[in-house]
Image (cartoon, rainbow, N blue to C red):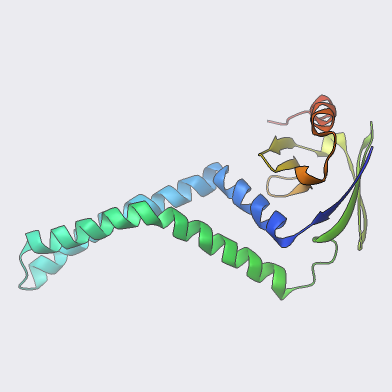
Length: 172
């Protein structure tokens, strides 16, 4: 089976956001930053009240409100920062083969991805995970990288999903 598709910057960004939102270490990092910073704000209000001449309650209320706003809006800031960085990484170097036209051949032996840079062959044993969301299939060939297959380019999504699921052995 051969699938021709165009991989865009948005597709690549979507994969990275998907990966981060589903990575235990990234989620842990986000939560540490999200919830420990407000604790720091509260401690800072106490220290400033000791050093300065401002009543603790006034500072506490101001820093508490700041902490609540931080908790509510930090995830959006975090993911927008990730998006900006990914765009910057893409634009700062040569990325031939990463974006643009792709041809993915799916066989009983494995996958062959052809791009403007050449071909990459991966046996099914080299695919360590198969994930999907509403818009993409992700065939993980390492813990941080995957072949990205946009569903918008597929006419036989269910057939491809079933075939890949029959071939991929998830490694623990």
